[in-house]
Image (cartoon, rainbow, N blue to C red; front, top):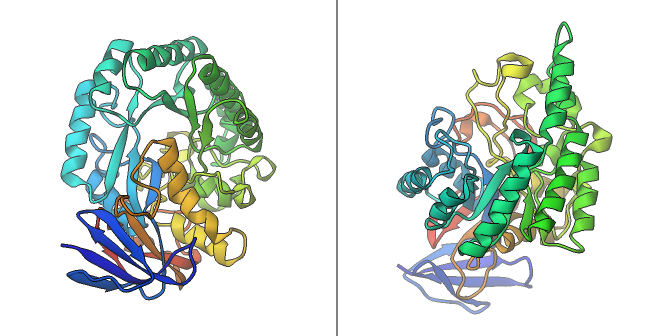
Length: 418
């Protein structure tokens, strides 16, 4: 069935438009009326290219008490996201052909939004097998690897690029293992630990040294580097400098942009995450967002029991899919962000980095993945109304102005609050 959206505002065009959708693709955009078997009035709200989250943890398989592809994708749709990229640290890890094949099957059966999967690294032979299933990139958790191991992993990825259709994109969790181990051991010697100690156990210098190492290894092995959840101002400076001479990108999370480590005094271990919230002077902030930025939520839900086991045993991770868009639109309404960068930081830039050629843009011939936002709608976050299995959020109770009110995936409406 074909569909027309009428009374649509577009960020880059004047006036209101009609958008026609047929067979999951955009077939016409016009200021003049368009006809279809179904017409939906967008009521002068903005229509943006469907939002893409390049960093989510749906915990499926093996950890589905925390989240699964059904609840996670419903949370994504509720938050305005049409495409998500899932991480490989599930049970089992998604670092073998069989595990990747099984996760694809699970996601196809449960997801209400588009999905892509990152693969974990393994021996070269296993990564060659995984390439038959076309993972969107490979993820390296540098905080779990020694220097020698990292050199081999990056070298193997360069060989993989020569032997297969692998595009050379590697995503990294940048924290240096040796620094984290040393500082954690030092802090555990205290007679009693507060939740905020966790932020000093994984200090900014651990991220900075790891980002430096990732840049060097990616450059030496001719790989494209994407730095996940960049949180340190010094790391940001290094990444920007490197971008002048090599292909590199990075993403920011909402919690690193809007909170600092003083939040541990309020939320305690509910705010525990890797990398941890930084001291205010070291932290990235909303003013660091520009038209080249990418938002990755690092949506990482846990059970309440997982989050309340003390400083060291509590699981790190924050659910973000249903809060990030209203948080950013609130900043737009406050004048801290230009509306024109929203489609870039939430869609277009991630589509370019990850090679999602038919996404990230509202244009004839592109996939009909669309997010409608109401800039005027005000409210207060209520965790009980979320679709995620997580029952906590540092943003629960925060007031917002601006809300995603419709999510369209391949021409199909999967969320409607208009």
